[in-house]
Every structure is written in structure tokens, then in C-alpha cells.
Image (cartoon, one colour):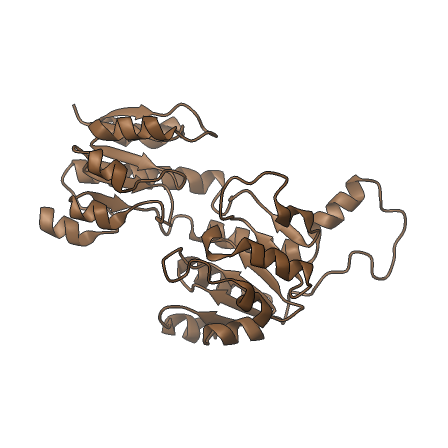
Length: 327
């Protein structure tokens, strides 16, 4: 019998198609990840894995997975998967792009706005009964309109954030591995070197994937290159940031604040040093967390597995050279 292991409890309706082609086992916990030893054991007999970003699909796991045909990651990012080893073993790897683009762009811009306008500080001010009178500079934040937005990583989500910025009459700069002429033509975004993006932007938004080249790219020197009035927003992966350097930049007032949806090690505790700063807005990695989008993500990941098991090319394959070789 064909077997598929789903590493987190997900809505039942999202797995209906998958259950027509395989025996599906779902890890019963929604909040707690499957233990490493359980994942390794299930991978040994599974034909398909539906994984989360917290699951490490590394060489150890792939080497023991003798029946595995497909790994479908419920995320756009796939830095938790050793794609090179999977390809060498003829295992198809898929992700879930597109379906979460707008939702993540919404959250990114919300995070930017909440950080700049001190929204969480203001809400707590009221909740804790500190609001006794109106004052001219009470909880005054920074304007967003007509400011310069610098996007590091102009992929689908970056482009969607740039589109939202146009409604605020923002100047958009971006740095990417390659230029995006369409974005430049349609939104008037300007391609600049990384250092120039840092020095000119009022908001530096990190939306690039975590790779060997981008790991730790936001370090002490990067923060020192930013305006003292600038805000740093990270909605991609925590590994792009050297957190000790970010904290130092906040302590030294080298930047005005930070909005973070991701961290180097997740989850973080309420003792994390960055949480001691009132000008830091921290969220628990909820970029794509709307009910509609999460359902779409599970459904797409599930359908990718169905397609592979049926001998059809999956919609969002990451290593298409494997498909051409195996088909």
C-alpha cells in the first residue's frame, strides 16, 4: 500500500484527494512538531511526505527513505530540505508558492506600519491605563507615506509589497540576484546595489530566501550603513540576520526600530534579548497565517503528492530535472 506521512495536524478536507491514492497518516499535534525520531522512522516506509518548515529533511533522513518519491513542503521556502540530496536520489521536492503571496505581503506591510507608528506600544498604553491626557508628541511614530522603501529580495512577495507601497506614494528601491524589468516598468521600482539600498531606505524589508549567500547578510556593517531613522523589517527567514548585531544596533540607536516575523531559532521565549526593546515588534512567524491561505497551502502540497504518485508532473516542482529524468 502506498503510504504518505503528514507531519502536522491539518484540516481534514485538505487531504481528501490524497486519501484516494494513499494510506495517509497524520501526526495528531497541531502546535508541536513531530519528534525527530518519529519522522525518521516514518520516512523509512513512506512514499510521500507532507512537511512543514520546522521539519529537517536532511541527508540523514533522505538516505534512510528507500521508498520515498516526493516531499511536499507546506511553505514557499525550502531551506529545511536538502534538495541536492533529494535530487540525487530521484526524490521530487515541491513547495507552495503563489497561493500565499498576497497574504504574506499584507502581513509584511502591516508589520512595517505597526513598527513605524508604534501601534503595539500605543495599544498597551491604553490597556495598562497609562493614557491620562493628550500630548503633542505622545507615542509619535514615523510617517510611512512618501518615504523610501528598500526591498531585499524582489520575488513574488517583494513585488506584492512594492505594489502596496505605491498606494502610500513610496519610492521603492530593490536589490535582487537579478533585475526585474516588469517591476521597474509597472511600479517604478529602482534597482540599486545592496549598500545603496541600505543607505537610502527609510524602511529596509528583507524578503529574500535563506541561502549560503544570504545567510547572515544583515550583520553589524549592514545596520551601520542604514539611516539612524530607518526601520528594519524581516518577513523571510531569521537566518539572514545576525541577531546579536541587530540588538547592538538597537541599543546604540543606529536604527529606529525593527519588525520581525521570523527568528534564527524558532520559537523564541519571552526572554529573548530583542523583546526587551520597545521599538521591536515581534510576531510568531505568521506571514501566511490566514485561514484561506493556509487551506490553499495544504491543498497544494497534498495535490503535488497526488500528482507524483499518479505519475503526473506536480504543479510546483523545485527540481524539475528529476522529473524529466524519471518520467
